[in-house]
Length: 367
Image (cartoon, rainbow, N blue to C red):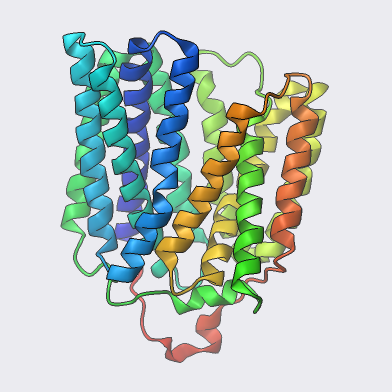
């Protein structure tokens, strides 16, 4: 449990540091909006696209997952410092850009190390994944807000937070489950089916979700601290998603949340404020689909976690190249959310607790 909470706090601080670097150092140094948009896409491609090969490396070499997450947190702190050094010496965009790249590399290493560790010790439950995944939204939101409005304050706060998280991970890095290559209970999250089909369908579900999130309508009138309302909805959705799936089953959780989310998005043209509950409901699916994907690949939790992130960045990238008008966003987002549901439901997921059925898999340490 200590490791789960330490990794969750570290997830918050790593995303806080990355978005502080992006909005507090890189954005002021790059005045061209088109170039800045391309750099943000580059950050996403590095931070999320690299998680798949890094996850495969963790699985193949049995590398310590908590130690790898700690390494990622340290690299992220270094990237933040380099980015702000460029801001301090007014050296143009070179150092902020370098800092962004370093922070993105650290982000990738931390996420795949911490996320796959949680999957290996989950005891067949989805709630731990929901807890871990939820914290990043708050870090992204706060880093964006502070980096934009209070960049000088954002730097020491973000650096201190991520270094504190790094210290906690280093203290807890022993016995991080490297002797257990996978969590066998994860295989109870899906019914037997071809792995290729499961991975493709779940990857499509994540990609549709990411595209929808990137073009979703925003609730109006959110200024100042109220801009955190969206990240808070994402946080609550992911946090509750895993627990809801444990209680009702993965398939039921998706069937309850995503159709209602799609309906609320479709109504945003009439009542834009409905975007907030729609976002909450949409994000219930995140830990659920991630765990089901890991269930399809129980021997490769790092690769499974990284694959979900690769699908995420693929869906997000579409938003950079497929223009969607403001008027069309409610219905377009609703349609993408429905497609995300259809892809996930096609896997025919069923959450069971194999620990009760097969007690001889060995002991798994709680995170």
